[in-house]
Length: 384
Image (cartoon, rainbow, N blue to C red; front, side, top):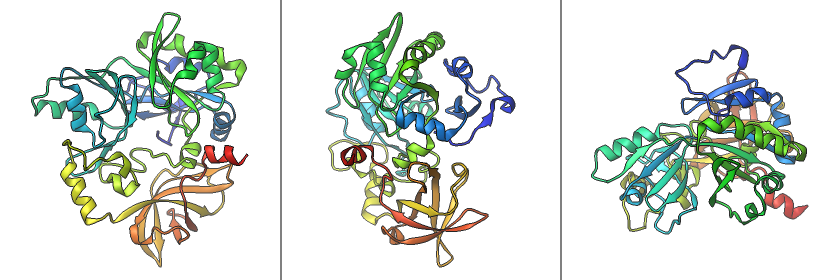
């Protein structure tokens, strides 16, 4: 998700950028600022972003992520076409299952990193980060002979995330929620509202995604969830940059883009080059792997005064006054009491413990390369 926002007062809403089905409800519940994502408005400010972080990690938040648009691939050749788009082997994927996939172009550059849902044997959804995969998929289909229909269905997700999310979901949908496995989904109903609910989310916390199947019911769904969860600590919120950087979760257009390949980011396990299927970019990824990567993503702790917000542009990483890479995401973690960052640097300098300099355009600070993620909730629970 994006880290910049404008106040509701001066944003200048128009019709060329779509509002989500939950837009009016989020304003009533305190949304003060919005950004844009996939040609839609997304609420990015409910007040103090640090309080939003604590709400997420201590209780639960409900986030309007309808901007995560779905690209539906449907038809007799849907499985073959989806596999053409994805370097990850999907041959054993079952109906009701989700998989994190990396989509690349013919040069091996990352186009998107969606979650793929298998809705039926002949129907899949790519649940997207911020890029125009609908056009990419339609272009691939137009230049091939696959029997598929590619559309953007009327599907809009919310994310309910945080340690209390399971109890809230059980109180609303019943004990069957406990049977929902990580990266699987099932259909549910809330009164007359038809939903698909998955055990997924973009938070590094326990959570669920609630896919609304009729945008006309968005206001009713948001209000129903908030009112049902309010007594259990549920707060309106937005995806937390602090928590996602703590968890080393990647943000498209920030930590990766069309000029980044999966191997630079350590995403090798999602690329099945030796499997017996072809996909767009396979030859290019093989060549990249054979030649070796020149950059590597690393975690850094920046030694400076606490950052007052996430970085809004890329910062130079230097050694001996030579530019060796860039900071892609940086934020102050109030839990760790550190400035933490993700960066892409020369592979020769990407050693844990190396000291580098960060030039943000105004100040130069020292930083240390450290292990990722910066905070692992599972390890923290084990220690506690």
